[in-house]
Length: 250
Image (cartoon, rainbow, N blue to C red; front, side, top):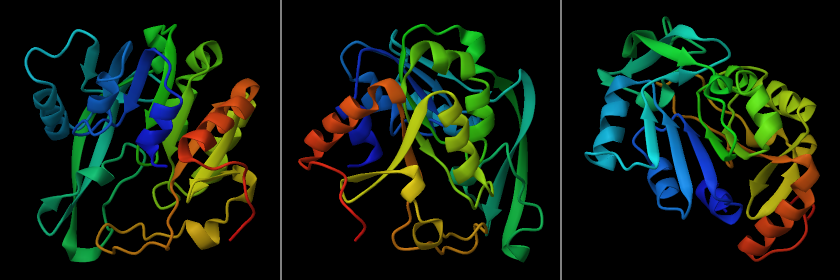
């Protein structure tokens, strides 16, 4: 099951949050779900322009697009974008790290000042799902969403990579655990708890955008379920994938 399949399997009508919406690969199918209101954040101006174009003019009434980053405070941040051999690597754009001195002469750094908001400042009451891809800034995004997560209890898919933020695969699940969430990872339709995740085997990647090296497999999408409903939701995910139970290691 891929990340979009996870959200389809557990979908409930309400607000669906896309953090790091980029060109709309998730926001567009989210907007097609019955009863969904989509709130999408994309701070990189070039990507945000394509996101708006993908939805057309006017943007549908049930979709809100915001050219901002999310974090744990209101204000402004620097978004760093590595430029490899003259080509911006937008998928690496991050407010949590810089690229000066990375990759030698092949990599340059482009810096863009972007506005930052806290999700808690929006006062959402019907948030049912979150897709989060913030290239190392996941902890700050979630910390700025603490009240909303406690109030609404959405399901979450979070891309977490040690190459962007060392220690993040420990820190982010620990933060969610304190809020009453259980974090899982999936491989070949097997859903396993975070305690079983083997970082040395399944989570090795170069932090240099000029070096395309990752482990095989490379697991970097994690799924957080509200603890009070985790059992029921896991059953739905297994049913959707046509499997039952969490099997042992292969």
